Length: 309
Image 1 (cartoon, rainbow, N blue to C red):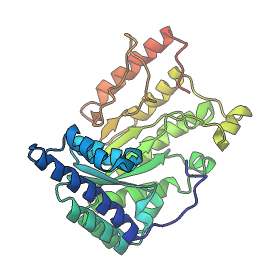
Image 2 (image 1 turned 90 degrees about the vertical axis):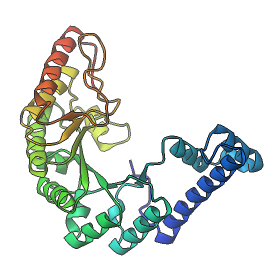
Image 3 (image 1 turned 180 degrees about the vertical axis):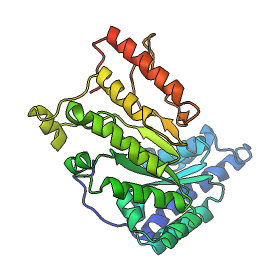
C-alpha cells in the first residue's frame, strides 16, 4: 500500500507541531463551550460557532478528524504511518513525551511497527519508548511460513517475526499480530496455517487479528493469480485453513475477526464471528471458535455462491 510513496522521516518538530495544532483546536472549542454555557463539554454548537468564525476550517480534514476524536472520548492516539519505531529512539521518545504532556488523559497510544525494526532495537531503547508512553504495537505478521514470506517479499523470516514479537512483549508493549487467511492460496494453505500457528505460539501476543487476503489489481500477487500461478481459496477452503490454524494455536491471547473481510456466514446467513475489537479469549473460547468454524463449513456447503475473494 506504500509502493507509490517516497520514504521519508518526519522531524520531531514537525510531528510535535501537529500535536500542538490538535491541542489548539481542542482549546478553542472548549473556550467556546464555556462561553455558550456548556461547561467545557464540546457539543455540536461549539463546532458550528468555530466554523462560522473561521470558514476555512470547513475544508480542513484535520478539523473534522479532531472533532470526531473529541466526540469519541479523545482517549487514544495513533502514531502514523507504517513503522514509527524506525525513528531514532531519542526522537520518538521526545515526540511521545510531548504527546503525553499535551494530552495527559490519554489512556492508550498505539503505532504500527515491523518485526525487523523491533528486533534491531536494543532492549533499553524499546524500554525507553515504552516508558515514554507508547502502549501498543500492531505488527503485520501475514504468515509464519518462510517460503511464503519470501514469496510476498515481506523482508523478514519467521525467526525474525518471533524475535521482534518477543522483544516487544519483553519491553512491556501490548502486541497485536495480524495474519492473512488465504494468503498461500490452494498451493500453500497447509504450511501457511501450521507455520503461522507455530510462530504465534512462540510469540504469544496479546492479540491475533485476522485480515483475509484480497489480491489488489496492480500488485504482484494479483498478477500471479491472473497468470494462473495462484489459486484463491473458496469460503469452505478458507474455513478449513482457519480450522487447521486454530487447532494448532496454543496461546493466551485474544483472537479477533474485527474486519469486514471476515464475512463467513452462519446457518442464519449472519456473520459467523463477532467483529468485536476484543474477539475471543484463548484458550478459554478456543472450543467455541472451532464450533463456529464447523457451523460455517456446514452453512457454506449449503451456499456455494459465497466466496472469500
